Image 1: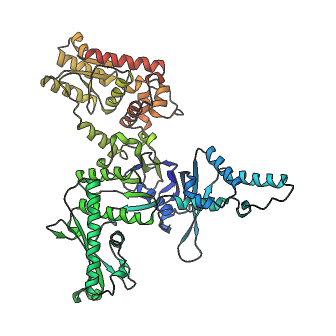
Image 2: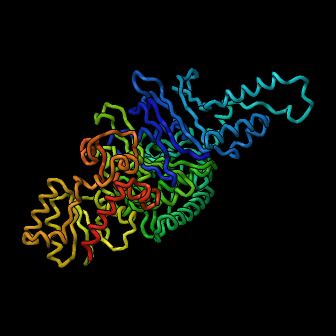
Length: 592
């Protein structure tokens, strides 16, 4: 079964997240400020398909207990063992129901206060059957009304009707197992103690357990074993895990230097007080010349080692996995974060990954369909969290979108867009994306190199620099008060107040206070905002000033749709088509 989307209710800061669709390419990114609710979303998922226990801290005061729904892509083969005992009639009803629901089913997870004393809350799963139960009951009633003679003895008599509850349990058991990795708590420690029950305890115990699992070692294999035999076991395990890690390191990260992962079983000395005489494990990461404790290594190396251990240990259960990463690569420099992103992309081929981040280096600006924004509803820490999916990303606040906007800007500045000729200077980043889209929509053959500044008032300085460098350029301006003022200044300062000469290089987008006004309201709602229910009577640019939409994000999403040929010029109405053609031709005529 493949997880398609999740919905969380009454979990910590989340009252109702709404349906959060997971990205089709296996990587979903959550951005938002501190305390926005990103980690809460991960922890909620971990509570239902990761095996974590719900605690009182996860509940909301004066609210009902948490609920979580997941939508899955149904795969009959995944629960075939359960279905083989079910009557063919009920299987046919299930198959027809699934087909009607376009192969999508939903599970609902709820909790009740536990009475057995083992846990504070007991978890329950049920199928959101959307009428399946009624269909099964109607079929049974129909059989009862028409049956006039006992059925002949057959193997069918050993089969039973489809039980909705059992079906929900079977689907739940077939889901990928969530594995939560937190950058700090998941890091490999320098050492970890072994208690009287033979369990690892203290900081880093989970990472140490992962180490032993990957090395195929049980603590009992080491306790009470003769020294030479124990050392043989340890040496064999160290070689096994080091060889495997170096394969992972070179294949996924591209590093060539060999590292050795090592551990040893030791006894605390007399100077350790209460720990004296008690066993513990010690870990090292060696590079061939230097043997250092994990904490003495760089955060990058330590992060990758610890993540490798979590990844490999999770493979032991044989189920597919969903990796939940809370701030992966936090505190790493940009190059190391790029390696983390490379690793995530490679893992996504067969493993779903959901991660939170504040870093622009962990966001690919050409994959904004992966990104969901998490923020407080009213900007207040006490207000509930809301999740804004990729299709509505432009409605998130600028603070929430900070890493996204930085990623987009950083990538833009690294492009080699300035050429000797055919440069088009634009007021801002959103104009860059729209012009790229317009050029493609009209199939304009003339080459243009679009250069966005950070505001209309920066255009004069940019144009002066281009002229000083001997670079040819055209300037496209909005036909608003600021745009007309800049046009007037450049005409005077660059072209000696010669209107005819200025018009050869300067272009005001006629009757448009902003480039968004190139679109009709209907097309802007449908193809840019992707919200046809949105109503307003003002110009598109006037609407955006008060709507709280991120101009560069919605512009970029429009460009993506055009590049993927989801939108063609003929899809737009005549008004929009005419204006786009007018703008493109006007700029192209001014190019060489």
